[in-house]
Length: 100
Ligand SMILES: [Fe+2]
Image (cartoon, rainbow, N blue to C red; front, side):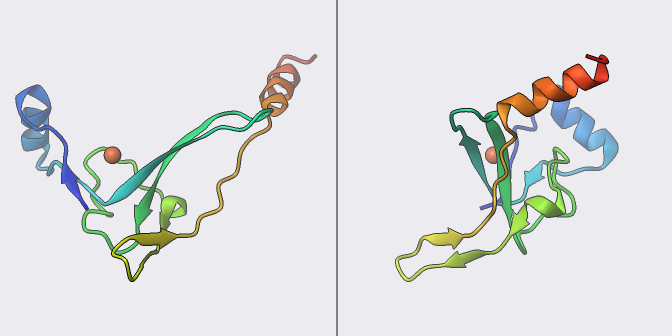
């Protein structure tokens, strides 16, 4: 379900000044860990949710939007391929940038 982020105080004033609303589209948060890989923290948005084109915090990327299939028991099933970076990859990139 879409929800509104807290919009009282300074952030609410900023939203009002910029003519923006406080709503976020429906999404699920994930934190995925595996030995030898970098931890992935992300969220996946529900296709056709309200506010996909105007997320209050600019978090929507098309690559993070997928269909959530309603199930008979009232839950949803989503299929999404999460890709983890090997922990070594980051060290290799850093070494390459520093000419090592
Ligand atoms: Fe959230």
